[in-house]
Image (tube, rainbow, N blue to C red):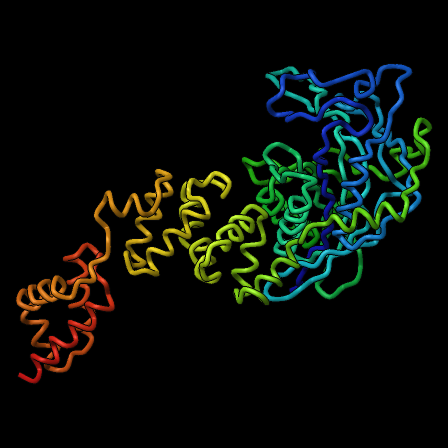
Length: 481
């Protein structure tokens, strides 16, 4: 039976976090919240006789991304008209880049199944976003607030061979954009959109078969689901003797299926030609060098530092740097005198568990990095034990109160007083003569059960180390008696 593999490339559209639009002075606003058509002007609504002006900040942000993706920043840039008709494209064409993009020939490394794969970046080019269609019953309205917002389109080579690689690439690219401060990564607001180009071929083949393109995927989950379905659909089609047709597909979130939208356009269909209202843009090498000096520490470099300097595992370091806000939370906690591995364990373990259950991001968590360190220090001082600390963290997560306040209010301080614990241990031994007799007869496994009864009596607040010591001494004394 023939085995198949997918051949996948991604086109990623990232809105640049500039204050104004790509070719006019209109402010960039949240298109999901601002009243429709309130940040528009003659330029972005394509009134006759208007002229575009290039947004310098958008170009700088594009250069930053190009550098972070190991691209060549091209000195000669040219904008072009890409002609097609949609109701939310007021000019009837989009000002984009085609033959002379801002950046090209880069790469991005991803890690999947303990292997590093290098995904080629064909180009990263600047363009303007379209408006937004709003469908209401049988009618459609157009909001042009988003029209003209700077977009950076990042096009990969068809180098991905699994859905796992697609997901890893998407997450890594999103993280880089957020680290650079050029995109806030909130896909629910449409500021980052994916398009997957997918074909299939027999495993081991070098042929590049007919592909389909799945448009406007607004979450990584949708990207994964759509890719999985389309791969399976194409394999089934080929195995039944059919042929894949080059088409543009949409993805239905409810059914989980891809559906045909239209025949796929070719470059010639867009009738690209140089934008006559914009002169070629020449990028100065000195400007690129100056921008490169402003690049922040990116995820890969931060991960290596966490491993080499802080002694974290590859797994923990990778999880912490995958999200910029999480990495910042972790590093803020390290400003106190606390062990890095201990903080990493609490963040990636209990804190992530509570966040996942509540469906919140780390920016929304009521437990500050400083408050988490205070909790850790209570454990280190043996004021509370680990199990109690988990309960305290949950209360901190819900209320925002400090660990010290919660421990005091709920009387959760660890019992380490030997005389108090001796009395409780004696009660447990007297109440359980049969298990005690079996332990003394050689069933060593019952020791843990007896300690557990003490912990139960103290609601988990007994100092386990002290309990173990006293319990062993008491039982050994009984054995010798």
